[in-house]
Image 1 (spheres, rainbow, N blue to C red):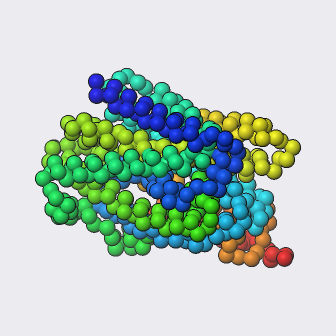
Image 2: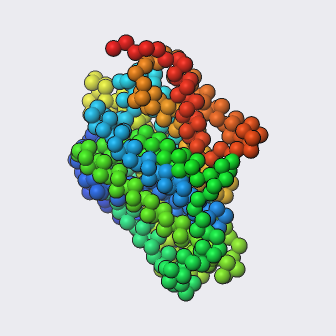
Length: 483
């Protein structure tokens, strides 16, 4: 019976999203879909982007890492915080000055059509893998802890959720997502606070005694000083900064929402506000992870990793209202990453690969039909990727996400850095070679890092190593720019 009630709550939640989508997509057009008519309010975008930047991966995986690794993920978060300022005061002025719809059009203006297409293709690869990994994790939790009791298979759940996402994104695009993300971030944060408060209460703690208990258990350690280890604090902070620069500043999904804000000044307010909000929220998630680990020990539960939070919330006998809060929070964490990614991928493919806005011979109706076709194709691709990740699931996916980012965003970081930091031009042939060769070399280094590097383990700095290698290859194939 409880499973049926939870399923009905999820369905009602979708109904609310569809209502918002219908309201916000009235009189929408292609410009509404791609950049929200550049009329979004900065504070709405900032708050909604908290949900996009965190996603179900944070909601499930981050609390599950604390028992094993303490708060060492917060080292990466401190790097994120620094990276947001680079995005706000280096990249956003560039995008607003050029008045871009796709941020990758900068690469065309600076380095030529090959760099433009290559950068867009790497974004398509990066965001497809990252978004579907996050999507898979939430579908997995829903299937394992709710739908399995009703004999509803994983495959049916995945297809249904993607169809529902299509329903509320296919018309309004960014204009809709700015508001649905705000709603979903609200529900996610309320669920986080309610669950944290209840666990503190059930353990007979107050905030001070809860922190003391987590500290005594070794859960609150943040900084690691072993230089050779993958979680050495300087590597984690530096890696986190460049992850934010790449996964936010060079990511069409994240920047699509930013450039929908009317002015540069307001977009910068959005970024700075987001940096503080994210740091605070992740700290709460880590604290919740420590409390959940203490709770599991007190109840004799052996669950850990990605299963920790959902098992305690759904299967350990907590009050049903707490389970409801968890499910709403989980679903709210799912959609800001999935819906935004689907919209951004559609936008990038239409603008960057098909050149939709350059086709003056196509009327608005034809452009819209092509956009809808691309949107549906990416939804089908999402489904295939979700099934793939189900086959290779290793039980804790937050590190998998960071490794994927290290391989796929490195070439993007190198291309933008080369354009911004140098005055040289590139031979077209060197660009795809450098962007493909550097991740391959980095994969070999990462796989054999301790043997090749005297015991040194590569961590989140993989992205920076990849970008530096690609930048070096680009520099070798560059020439003096003719002005």
